[in-house]
Length: 413
Image (cartoon, rainbow, N blue to C red; front, side, top):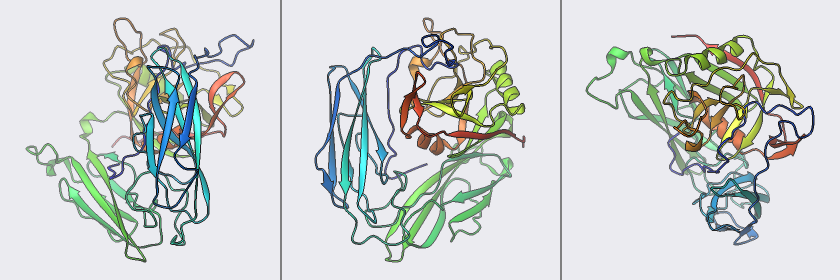
């Protein structure tokens, strides 16, 4: 999504052999458990303990490591945009809330050796006397708008095919909204239907309608403007990229308890891995499994356990295709494994950042990337922000189960 206020991202350094893809629940306490990481003493403070709507608040972190990197993320309360989230000193603007709320922020520190530290800071935000009924006090961070005004949310960016009917969904916008207005701002012109409602639709132009001379013709951009009852406005934009049918790989929709994630698989670069993943999909193997490992700024991992951290039986491991040239960049999907390169079975992970330390090199076996997220990266980011705990010997387990309800192929165009 193209935002006027950037969504917060988190960067977390990890040991070279992570992520462990098939971390078996040990039959004995120390058999197969994840290795402990070093700890960096870390502190976090806020410039004020209480803030009014619109007030700028500074966040300050310290770490007992000269090489420490910093990553701030919000863990509680109405969503805000964290400025300089990857620095020791960050800041945010207190949001509009109906009733007094406490916001909590966690800073994660890391160093090249893989040591990690965490600390939290809390700020109480006073109720906004101009708050308007209907405004959601716990909206996600991002979008456009000012304190006490509406917030526009045009939805996640999309990749589509010619002939697809696309819905532009602004229903996540918040505030006491009086009007919605969609307009196209870039790309081959299309006709918008219901452009004055929260959900507008259009039909993707046929491939022959795209200009071969215009490199941007296959990239459409749309702006959503919302206006509240007090005539305050906010705007957000969304990009829709048109793909050529000849370049489209198999697609799978993961319907999760946080929303849908659509992935496109690269069977040209990772044929054995894609075949393996699709066999699990076709067997309904992933239905009812959980995302069991979540590390902000690193990965969201799932595909092997059901609630209660009960491990599912899998087929035999497959040979690594990590040398296929695909990189562990943000928004890609890759196979998790143990420390043995050819040990991947069913588990996979989404990269939350450009994790170059997971790429194949002459001295690093790497992890096999086999696709990318087409829709729902905002869902992945929301999963990445949930509170986690150590449970049954495993670190970074979400406190509340995040389910993959179903995983299904999307029919080829």
